[in-house]
Length: 92
Image 1 (spheres, rainbow, N blue to C red):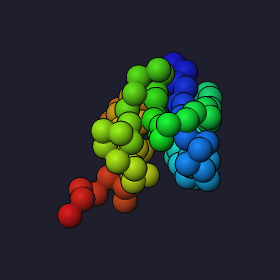
Image 2 (image 1 turned 90 degrees about the vertical axis):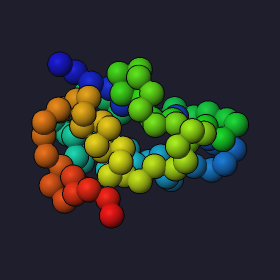
Image 3 (image 1 turned 60 degrees about the vertical axis):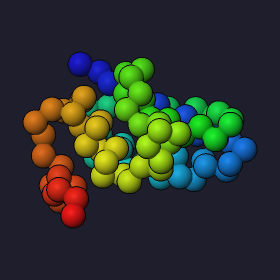
Image 4 (image 1 turned 45 degrees about the horizontal axis):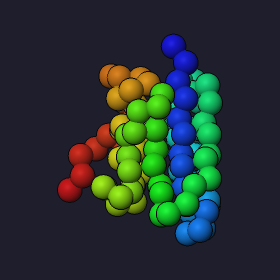
């Protein structure tokens, strides 16, 4: 199965560096599972992460994501059952 991740970010807010950093984290972690990771410029304060067109994180509802939280959500869709090592430790 092939999986696509899209990170839509606000250009007005200058969130490209944040989106690019998160993209790098996801590509490094899921290099075998992802066939594509797209950065989509947007406006109006948008910062949304989608996996196969399903929204898994929306800044408007959840605030800015920690990379480990997004990795868990992506993992649950592209590699269920796979461990993420230290990122799988429960939050304090």
